[in-house]
Length: 99
Image (tube, rainbow, N blue to C red; front, side, top):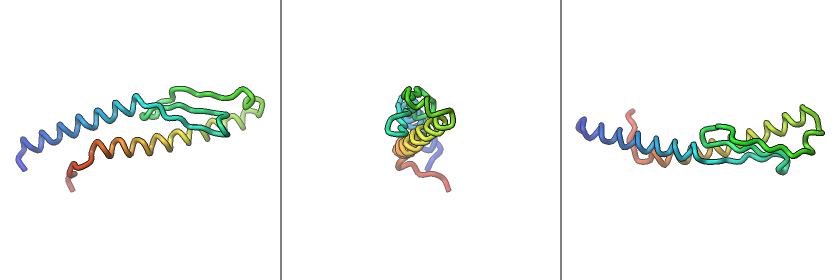
């Protein structure tokens, strides 16, 4: 493979990855805990976009609120990880990586 072809392939890959990252940044992923008592909205780049806590949850005390928020965050993060793997995998599919 000549250098020009290799450089063109690298530029194409860079564009595909940049497009994928842009799509991820614009996505909203919801994490839900305790049957909707807490909902975390995050982007595909892990930015927290919104946190919703049902008012009745607040009466459970700080520890319970913290636990529910962490559960919703972890749910959103797992979903984001799965989406990121898919989107980035699609962007780099078929590109031979050096060994």
